Length: 199
Image (cartoon, rainbow, N blue to C red; front, side, top):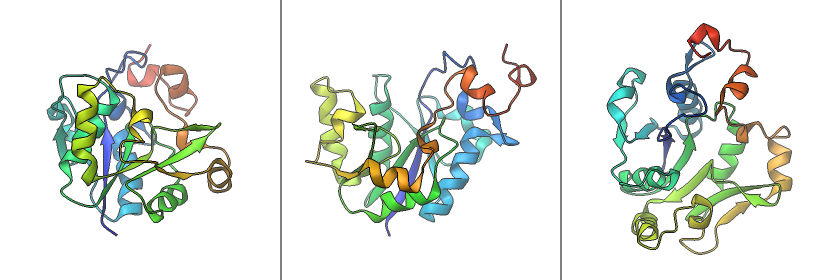
């Protein structure tokens, strides 16, 4: 199984008011919790992609710079794909700490240059698997202004889709797709925003 894993930390965290990747979650920075999950399911050391990777040095993860001038999730996807020389890369975001290991393993088991999950009759942007062979095709999307991750799921043809029925069998609560991307969502994890300096 030749698969790498990447965590995207490219957002500005405006709604949260603090860098989500570094926020405490279960006694660790959120990105480190996610990295532990990815390490178990891929057997490889995940890397973190960011516009300014140096500020994440304390996480102890390999860091990859997103060099695209555009600030969007697809720029991080491109950096992740471009970083791996072969095989495929499992890509998640830094605000997905409830990833289901069985669901990720099922995605990895499926073949295809792109593997995505269907929820509520929509293809979800993350988690997603891209082949390293699609780096040039994704880069070409920027030339045409196609910056949606969902639209780029078709960049190599029709993606392999983990259908909603199977997704719900494996992850009944759909916790994998629960993003902790604002203060309300962060409070729901049981963490006190005041305790970590968020008002």
